[in-house]
Length: 261
Ligand code: HEM
Picture 1 (cartoon, rainbow, N blue to C red):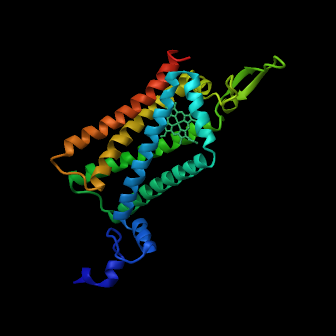
Picture 2 (cartoon, rainbow, N blue to C red):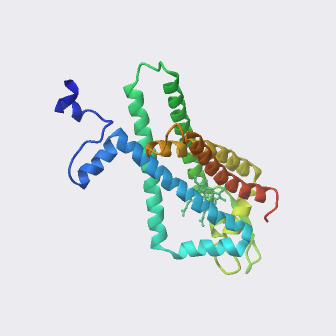
Picture 3 (cartoon, rainbow, N blue to C red):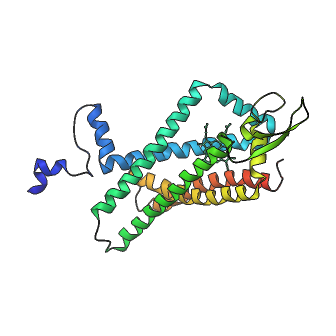
């Protein structure tokens, strides 16, 4: 009887409330657990898409300075479009983070007594792993932006072609012979430091754990999971995560060991 009472239904957070209009729909998506999980899955797919596109762009490093610097110049020339993409990416990342933290605190609030069943314990460990690895990846992104986007971590000694004096330059100020931002030199210089390279490689391991768990959850949230196809989903998720992490690590290792210089 009680579950049919309208007053009770209003306080049930894990079902989509019916309602008319875009505003109601958007409110439902953001305020219910089902809607939040769906958004976490969709934003997770978008972020994984960014990581794949970013990797494909970075692999141009193996094609030599001209390839990757031309690619960086092409992106820069997109102007307002590039800024729109950056703002969209930041929004997607913030939605993903905020909803995960809110879902996690909601489930902790709803279950103060602890667990009785192994399956629930496993699900909880998995979500705790996702939260911890997610936080590490977020901190990695902050470091990565400081490193390569803002050039705040290290400076490089450059000889001024006019005065002959040695000046310390921020990575982001490096220019190639065509006057373009020298992303090639920037990445080479960045990964010749073993401490920074090892830090990047460790973060790749964390990214591997996060992506392989996360991609499996995406299939589950989108209802694309069943006991029959579970092993296939497991392998697909691990394969995608492995390829991304191997690609990123190949860049770091190639520079660190001087295969690319
Ligand atoms: C080890 C492999 C990686 C390399 C070599 C690399 C390289 C770079 C470089 C050179 C830039 C600056 C581009 C420019 O200013 O022209 C950059 C920006 C960025 N990277 Fe990475 N990256 C790597 C991995 C990652 C990963 C794993 C993520 C995310 C989890 C990531 C997220 C970003 C973001 C968000 C930006 C800023 C994009 C923008 O402002 O346009 N990167 N990366």
